[in-house]
Image (cartoon, rainbow, N blue to C red; front, side, top):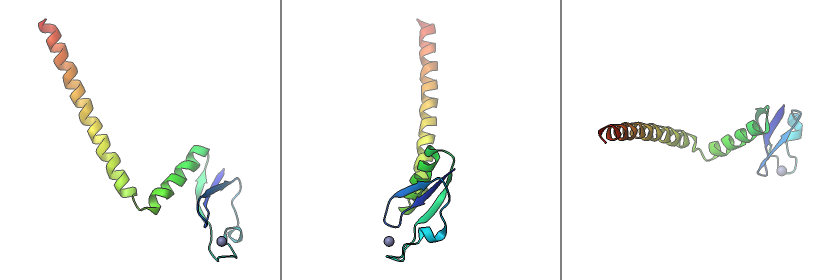
Length: 95
Ligand SMILES: [Zn+2]
């Protein structure tokens, strides 16, 4: 299991074992690192970091909306391609 943390000084790190709270706390500045989540694979760990990155800028809703829009646009394109392909087939029949 991979444990994903965000460092209070910036950036991310991972550990194989969960860290105790006192290990997260920094006595020098009184700030703490943040546990972000557990992952099974490195890819999943990176997703957790990226997700955090998006949350920090509070853009996740906008990203979700943009992804949805893109997906709808792709649907439109695929309908258009389907129509084009049908039109080409019709043309071929006429030749
Ligand atoms: Zn510190």
